[in-house]
Length: 181
View 1 (cartoon, rainbow, N blue to C red):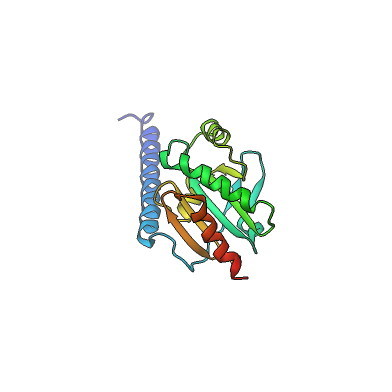
View 2 (view 1 turned 45 degrees about the vertical axis):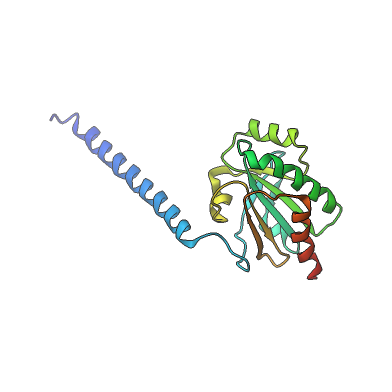
């Protein structure tokens, strides 16, 4: 081994170890999240920031005092297509209220495909990409679609794993929370 190749060899080892440590840290975070299980009723909803496709920034702090229907979806998810219609109809039911907001979180999707999905299904409530899957991970989601309904106190009130089957199913969950005022 010559003197000229030695620094490259050391740099390569440092990079390899750095990559390995980073990979192990990511696996550890995912494992920790898996061990925590799905968020359950009564737990405080995680803080999050969603930058919508039209550039609006929405934070969990902005939503205090509101019932939040946070739906995690993807354009490639077949059950998400039927559910999108039900969610939009429910949103139309509540849109005039100041104390209810629906948010869509596009999971592992391209912006182009997400926007095409939103347009095709006539979705009008705010939607944005889950950059780095931060929202998906913080809500400890396990797949798509998943919907988290947050009460006015910022607590998880309902977790729906899989698609809502009807607009009435969504309205029942939200109305129950509005009656608790």
